[in-house]
Length: 93
Length: 244
Image 1: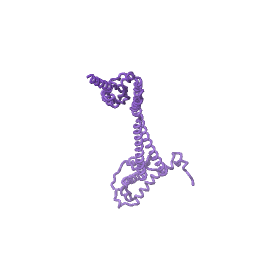
Image 2: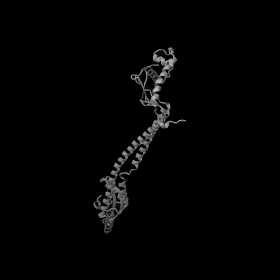
Image 3: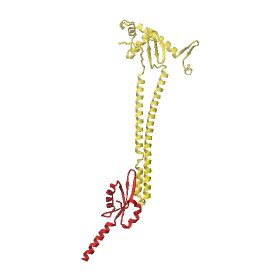
Image 4: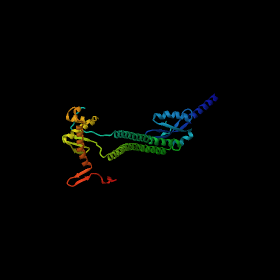
């Protein structure tokens, strides 16, 4: 019973870790007049730039933004240093 | 020959070569004007194509933003946006420039067309002047006024007798119909008899009288002038006289 419990805990932890620790920073624009923003977003699922871009594109498009590029993907460690730059777009989408 | 007397009639005398030259000239004018319009139209199109696009500035700023990963701060982004806005303002200015350029092109077209037209006119006039100088007298208009018993050659007025006016009128009618009259026919038309019954010599006499009166007056008007109470003088430039 104890063994089962510990196995479950390991699974849950690893799954939870993978979920929580993936973020991406990106650049987006809006035309006429040209507006730019730099933002940070949490990535669900696969922690890759491509996956992040896919998720972002539709979310941004709802507000009329157009994704320019995903700069990088990172985990919790990189979150704080980007908080200031992203400003109001920190974890907004 | 159908004969209708005209009170006032004009007959223009043009040599065929002059008419041909005029046709060629007008064709050259049309071709020249078309060439000018074409060249300026191409210039306008090229100009409008090559003028920078309003979005060129925005695209540049966007690329700057994408390529530089350090430009992520709030202040930097605001700065980039201001840059893009000033670019957009500049592109508004460009639109007005475009309009000014277009207006100037239209002006240029009009002026060039006028220049070509005037140039061709000048050439034609020069040629004409040359011809006139060599010919002595070119008849541009012949107006016969039966009321005043006078004939107007260009601007010269010559008084004629009734008989001479009649003869000249018959000749003018015949010229307008492109006909050549014999002396007998002339006499026939004027006297109202059948040409077959008329004497050739009678017509010839009428022509001789017309030539005498008209020729005499022309000579006095154009060459040997009579200045009242002073005497006679040649009515020509003294530089053109040469004795061989």
